Length: 321
Ligand code: TXA
Ligand code: MG
Image (cartoon, rainbow, N blue to C red; front, side, top):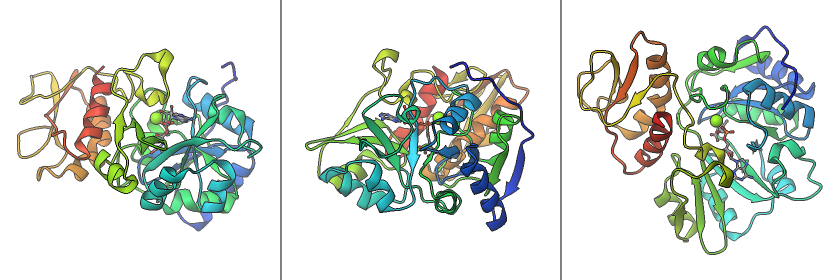
């Protein structure tokens, strides 16, 4: 895309009712605002305003073939935008508001800007469980398109300071509500009549999806070629720190920053108690810290594959690719 890149003074504002009103004013003026969700911080803009959506792509340096997730605050808003089949409805009933994104048929004439879906006939939709994002949707009265608030391809932000480090000068405002609780981007699925296709693993696990839908869940598998991308979060190299990352490290080399899991000597421990949810919540902050450390390389301990571990290992494989 060839959109000229303006430079802004970036203000970080503590999330409260005044800051929320200011953020909503920016949204209505067609400006993107960085805002926390329960997963990661998003860069939100009015999903019905093509210029506002273009400003998201420009700020992130994101390729325009990679479509965005649209965030809604209530059911009527969701149903004006997308068609919910039986399995989609069951999953939304079970997990919304929450960290699950549904890829659904887009309703024609819904007013969603063409740039949001990058020309696809489907739309990725999610009702988030965070008062700041829900408040911003309600206050602005608009469905909000929001990718993670980082430069394209980099590690997702779980704290306001991560957003500032990645997008400082590119956005006017960051709403700061502290660290996010989940720490990994939402699970993305395409619900069908006879199966659920998993496009991106997250904290809503395969078992949870199967139980709530009563249908088999099929993983799309890793290393999807770029031309067959359905969710480009699947791109082999993504969520990447700037330094080489070594996986399944039992101990660190001299020039490595070692990220640990469970009781072990290391520079940063994801969870000394080996709690998987705690590890997921801390993962991106650990990678951010390792990335700005003086160490030349990063190493990380093995993470068990069960439950949310599958999503953690998915992100780690891409970060190391
Ligand atoms: O937790 C999250 O999902 C965060 C917060 C901010 O909500 N958002 C996020 O957005 O991770 P982003 O842009 O980093 O990832 C969105 C993913 C991309 O991999 C994109 O390709 C996929 O959703 N996607 C969007 N629309 C799609 C569609 N119609 N079909 C398939 N995949 C789609
Ligand atoms: Mg992202």
